[in-house]
Image (tube, rainbow, N blue to C red; front, side, top):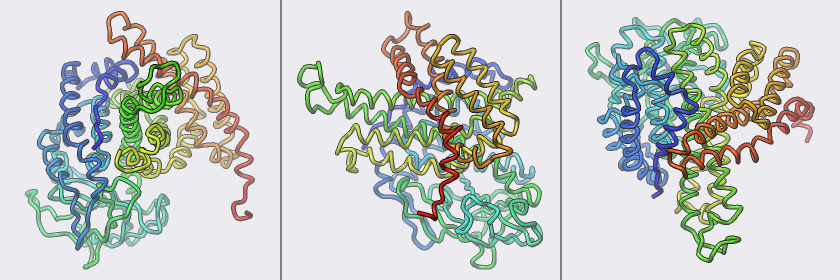
Length: 581
């Protein structure tokens, strides 16, 4: 069993230093948000994550889920943990108060969701998909649909899924073939969906599937996709459960990681057609589903932060306990954490995690300002920053989590490569995060094409200008921001005429943005730490300063090399013919 202790102190510090907690708490509707409330929530969430969910993480990985005759059984302990999770109100916490949630700011929800994800990624995915499904129905469903489904989905009595992918249609949703034929007030859905996270399970009484399908007269491509609600059990007008719907889990995928999260192959309509109900208007399904996907993309980015945190904690714990060799300049018996190269790995992991958390929490704070600010211009600017940063949070955080988890194995040495320590699980679990909800390449193309080129880099330059003000006369950061600004200009100028160039450079541009923005936010935290040194926890505050210095010295120098690869290296990529080798 591996231990997880939620980094509550760091979470609170990051919320205040870069998340804009004071600004968020002052927004309309957040009157009850106080330091005392937040600290009380975090304290209880940390206990549940550490005492209930974390002990199930390695067990779930070893046992996995079992599918027999279409019914899926989760590992021992998951069902009771989910019941307690719901009874304590944790499942409902991120949802709107109108449906039984707590209506708290995104900035407050984000650290709690990080706790669930770090303690048990497989478990947390059920809530993540359900909250996303709630958001899609809330934004696009009828009042009757909302009233029928959302209260019980919010409470966790019913869970939700997102059914997009098909065997022939991965990220290319234009190739979706699932059909929906009108029949009275509903539709009959037939088709197969794959990679459906928590598509079948035993922890809740009903599962509400959101399904992309085509009507008989739908136009081709993405313009002909509609969105439907298809529950596992049909729901009577009074909210009680009716007959079993014609949809079944045909099998579970055999995966590299997240074994306790059932990833289902879902068969719709093997006995005449699953009954589904249209969400919103016909042929607008992809537009509606993006409400859920954007929520999921931020959440998956947060998964990257969380897994990286878990791997880092375990690496520190092991390195401070393991004695081997005599570190240079130390007395005999000092643990391996004091070998210079192990110090390097530990500091690299910690600095990268804190940079990822800073970018995610900054984005969460802007989400709240965009949603609640009474000033339209302020809200518009915040929404622009959110749109710009979500692909960075998703792509940069998840790619970084794979590297950080791999470094965690290296810290363990040979013990990291065997399953007993649990270090390998973090790498296996992390590896899916750069893939699902849009691969890193998809995030990067969105970042350069829709988020920079479309407005000529205007929003990106607003962020750069703000960061310049934050870092002031810090020469290395000012130079890095100048590099980022030059790359934004290059993307804005090259994309329309030569999209193949920006596409080849997109992932490097995403990484550059993540590194430079992360470095600036770490510097902001370091300044906040220095201001508190006389009256605060010296060890913790010196740690904030140390990780900022390390990141600036060891990670930020990559900015120049990335800029060169972005603006010049595209030629090598586009000239390459894979079929000629």
